[in-house]
Length: 304
Image (tube, rainbow, N blue to C red; front, side):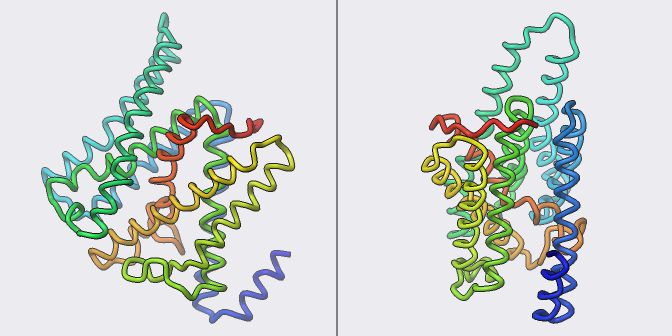
């Protein structure tokens, strides 16, 4: 089946586009296997280590997009990485220090994660639209130092906390984002005619967005074959995830377009930087987490 798929692509695409698509598929497959391998370990150490080093790469890529230098760069790193390191220390205290009140510390970690997620949500819902329309925030040297804290820290903390609390949330959310990305990319390439955000991200189309949503409908349908679900609620949640993933992608394109670069980095062949691959996750994870805990959306408990 894969052979037929690649043969059809080769016949319909010019050699450059075909080779780039092959690179994208191969890179995405390797990333997925690395993530899944870390995820399936009983101990969180592998996953936590992967997330920490990914955080360093993401923050470095964003700092270059924002053109931060000297003292601003130092403050940016301190603000962004401090909550993550603090989370790790609390987690170590819970699990490895004797005579610790684990329940109390877990409640503290949850409240800490919710607080950071709320700050990230304010940024995505209010400040990002202002930046896109008025182009003032990401060009403000005093405000740029907070961007790592707003964009990456909430996503990272929710991923870490939910890995401890409920792996199903992270796994299902990651699959929904991936399905949305893949569906949007494939349908956009195949059927895309009407631009979604012409001046920011010319490659994004309305047809691609619909394809991303339909891909998530397929994913929800697959889940429904194995679990008893509130289909209407889960479809509404999938719609939110699809919209947020496209939103994150568009804002990252906006940041790149401001300094006239195609990719945030070059670490992943065919994709560019790690930020290019995870831009959809940045608004989706913290906002979805807050919606989930406040609307009592019940996701299926997957045995991992």
